[in-house]
Structure formats: structure tokens, C-alpha cells
Length: 408
Image (tube, rainbow, N blue to C red):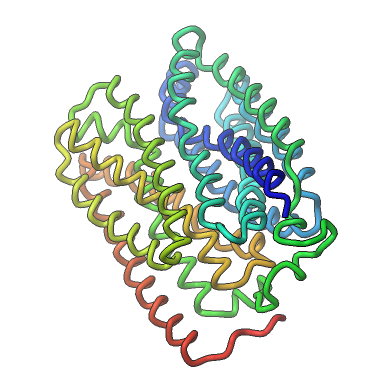
């Protein structure tokens, strides 16, 4: 294995992930966009949810493409869709065009890239899959730390439409350059560049249709859904929630975007590396327990310091869950079909992207408070914790007394 080459590929994948992480700074653009266009804020927020949903749905075809289309070509196509989608959003003159440019085009471009970036990293680093996927996902999570203040600077000098255009051009150029440096996973762990994935990994792998016939698939899908709701809820509404329940200023709320990004990055990197040491299941359990505690903390966060602490915990737990899951799917169903298998399970993220942010809006409008949002997210996480414990116990029994699956 060419160690230097695989780190060059990893760096290129990190750049790709950093660019699609720009969506986590959406809250910086959302309010100015609704004001300058005189659009309903709820409809603008819906574009964000559409983006995340389409992003998750695209993980399925992109997972299939990994084994049939060179990864470099996938990344180049993604660069055009994602970068130009952001740029075109700056020209969108009505809500349907906003949905097409940001929700459809950017969401599809991000989804086309997301799965191949993670699975390619795991393929290149079979010895450290948690570290590789955690680093790529961490760069996605830390993007708002840089992009949020840059976006604020652009908004101060230009209007939000120009900010979209400038940001879109940057995403396009950076993504395209990184795509040209990306090499497919066919070399990962192999002695020869022409080695196939079947020669690299264990033969005890599940195809997507065989995976979906197992109870483990549905358990992991539901666990992923429930564990992502709280993180996506806070990412989409952290600023508004903080200003209302903690009484923080707009400036402090903007700073929280960067703090959340650092926590997200730290969780993805630290928990991802930890999973290589203690296993993905134990790491996932730690994240879920932290998340439940955090929802209790948020319900009592009535000051800047306490709310900031809760945001940090949110970012670490959510980032850790996102970093652990690719390794968990690889361990459970094998690595050869990881791209498509993970893509199917990743659809749970898209559902959570709709449920989480929309639940916040619904509870806020119906009760005049965010309290029930934290209760709802805590209950979802608790159910995920219970299912994960059951999954771990079942898997332990299977490993102890049952033969390994045969390839189909």
C-alpha cells in the first residue's frame, strides 16, 4: 500500500467534505434571504430540510455507482451540481427556484459526493476505518467554523444574493480541484492496483437485498433515525433557540455556530478514533447516553455559559454518531458492499432531517416554547439506546454460537 498516496487521497476527500459542510452554516444565510426576498422564513427553512433529505436519498445511487463508475468522475459531477447550485441560489427569484437550486441541485450534488467520500476513505484505511471516516466527516462538521464568519463578512460587504454567488464559485473551484486528486478505492489494502474489492476484503459480505432481509438492518436504520434527530434539530435552530431560552444576543448566537462546528469536528475525530480502540457499538452507546443527558441539560439552559456547554455536548455526540456508523455498517454487513449498504441506511438521516427541524417549529408554534422539542429528541434518543443495547446483546450471542454468514 502506498502510504503517501492514500493520505493525498484522504486530504482530497477532506476538502470535498469541507465544501458540503457549508450547509451547516445555513442559518447565517436563512434570515437575510427571507428578508431580502420577503419570503416566509418557514419556507426558506424547508429548502434546508429538502437539501438534507435529497442528500440522504442520493446516497443510494451513489453507493451503487462506487462499484461501477470511477470515483473521480463521481466527484467531478458532484462539483458541478453542488457548486453551481449554490451559485444559482443567488439568482433564484421565487420559492420554487430556491427549492430547485438549493434543495434539489445542491442536495443531489452533496449526496452524490457524501457516500463515496466516506466509503473511499474507509476502503483506503482498512486498518483505521474510524479515524479515516471520522476525519472526513470532521472536516464536514468544522466547515461552519470558517464559513460562518466568512459568510458574515460577505453579508456585511454585499447582500445575501452576492454572498451565495461568491460562496458557490468557491465551492465549485475547490471541489473540482479536489476531485482531480481523488483516486478510487480499488487499490486500498491491495498488493496490486488492479486488485478487485472482492480480493481485498472478506468474502462474508452482504449484498443490499440480503442485508434488507435481516432484522439487524431495520434495527440499525431506526437507531440512526432516532439518534440523528437531536443533532439536526440543534444545527438548524441553535441560534433561534439560544436567543429565546438562554437570552443570548445575536452576536453570541453567531459565535455558537463556530462553537458547534468545533464540537462536531472533535466528536467525529475523537469518537471515530475511539471506535477503532473499543469498537463501534460501545462508542455509539457512549454517544447516545451523552445525547440523552444533553437534552436534559438543554431544557434547563437559561444562560449563555450553560447553553454553550449544551451546544458543545450536542456537537460531540452528533459528530461521534456520524463517524461511528460507517464502521458499524462495515462490521455488520461487510466492506465490499459498504457504499450501497450504507447509502440505504443513510436514508434514515434524511428522514431525521425533516423530522428534527420541523418538530422544533411545530412545538414552538403550538406551545410557545422549545421545551417539548428537547423532550421529543430525548425520547427518540432513548429509544435508540434501548435498541442499540438489544442489538449488541444479539450480536454477541451470534458471534459466540453461530457461524459467519456466507457471501451471496
